[in-house]
Amino acid sequence: MTDRTTPPPELAVRDVTVRFAGLTALDAVSFTVAPGSVHAVIGPNGAGKSTCFNVLSGLCRPASGTVRLGGTDLTRLAPHRIARLGVARTFQNIVTTEGTVADNLMLGRHALTRAGFAASALHLPRAVREQRAHRERAREIAELCGLGDLFDTPVAVLSYGDRKRVEFARALCLEPRVLLLDEPVAGMNGAERVRTAEVVRDVRERLGLSVVLVEHDMGLVMRLADEVTVLDFGRAIAHGTPEEVRRDPEVLRAYLGTDDTGEDAA
Ligand SMILES: Nc1ncnc2c1ncn2[C@@H]1O[C@H](COP(=O)(O)OP(=O)(O)O)[C@@H](O)[C@H]1O
Ligand SMILES: [Mg+2]
Image 1 (tube, helix red, strand yellow):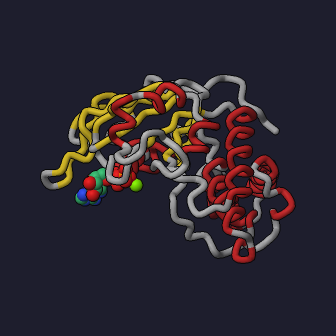
Image 2: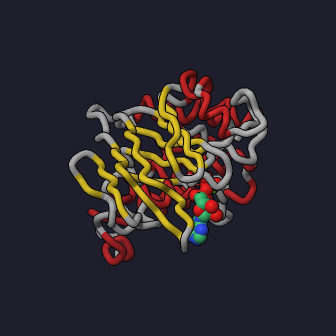
Image 3: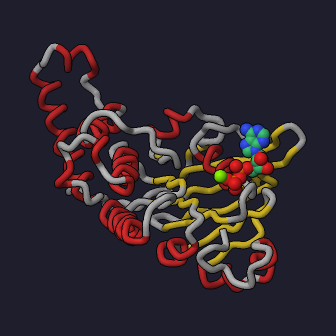
């Protein structure tokens, strides 16, 4: 495993505002994802979490504000450029039903393939070597994600939890420095959730990534996150450790009808 040694750059979100036809989905939101940390973004439905992810990954351009990765301004870059600069994301909905696990991970590697289509198609030696190296790396990533034994298995026959992890592994195949996870355990059963939490923790440690996590499962957030940003009606109402935010009066108020940020709060 080619483990990372240099820490990823800091991801700094500053005063980001997004408006949709009169509705302010994000209102001057700022937070900082510390190098190598797991940073959770939580909040009630409609708080602006998905919009925030869309800004980070370039799918949504803010009216104002900036997103910087170390010294690089990502704010108005196209999604593929942001991905190449080291910010990869997973999507909440799985669409992957075709090919084997290996095929899907190689799609993730494709963006990094230098030899290009023509050389690969002609089986030129350099292209063959490069493909082999990419396949080896894809296999390592599969193993890291608990998919090693399933590498040559068609994704169509995998369990829901395993398919979610294929999606996760495919994002890792881009060799990101910052990984954006959109509800990585949504729809999973308890055992799959625990397994996925372990995988996220392992990956963060082994690859030295930063992880930004949007998640409804408060148990997972409490277990995994180093820091939490709480959004409510587009505003960042609290920042802190999981323990700090779960005691914050503003946060308790935002999660209306609950006196504690328990399992069902989000
Ligand atoms: N493309 C869009 N057009 C109009 N309104 C949107 C769009 N996307 C999100 N919104 C609105 O912005 C607010 C924040 O949405 P969203 O970011 O999806 O919240 P969350 O992910 O926290 O549930 C909501 O009021 C939502 O209806
Ligand atoms: Mg959402």
